[in-house]
Image 1 (spheres, one colour):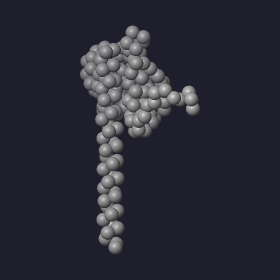
Image 2 (cartoon, helix red, strand yellow; image 1 turned 180 degrees about the horizontal axis):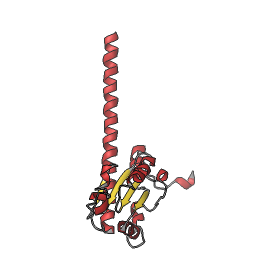
Image 3 (spheres, one colour; image 1 turned 135 degrees about the horizontal axis):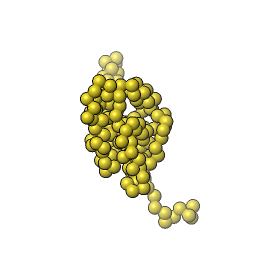
Image 4 (cartoon, one colour; image 1 turned 135 degrees about the vertical axis):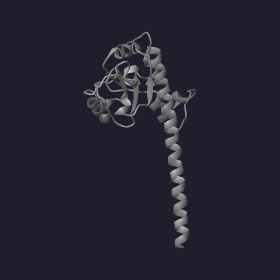
Amino acid sequence: MDKMTGESWVTTTFETLEDWAARNSFWPFPFGTACCAIEFMSTVSSHYDLSRFGSEVVRFSPRQSDVLLVAGTINDKMGPVLKKIYDQMAEPKWVISMGACACSGGFYRAYHVMQGIDEIIPVDVYVPGCPPTPEGLIYGLLQLKEKVIRDRKRFREQGRNQGNNQEKNESVNAGATV
């Protein structure tokens, strides 16, 4: 007990701690098919240091990741593979579409190239460019953090509102039976 005196303590709620962990510990799954994947590699290198944002744990298993980072051209043969990988990821999961090809098909206006991955999976953040810069990807990751904060706050408020509505319904029903 004597060792604890004079120490500084941090107090918070579990929700606050959970929110902090959710937005500061992304585990990306890189799905790189073209030159954008090289830009992703430079983003996780020591020069740009993506680890300062809590995203250094790159996973190559969809079951161990929560951010699908699609970097490069996706053709129609790769579409079902991408969809399967997305479906194997656990909730909550997010998608970053990186580069002109993944966002809109790029300069490939051909029958075999998908004109944006949002045709088969939902996209949370688009990072434009051909190829996008590492700074652009970092900015996209920061935008994803902001989206996670907004979504978690909205989810919590909806839960509180549903709880309040349920209490009101129970009190109305209890009053009607009396």
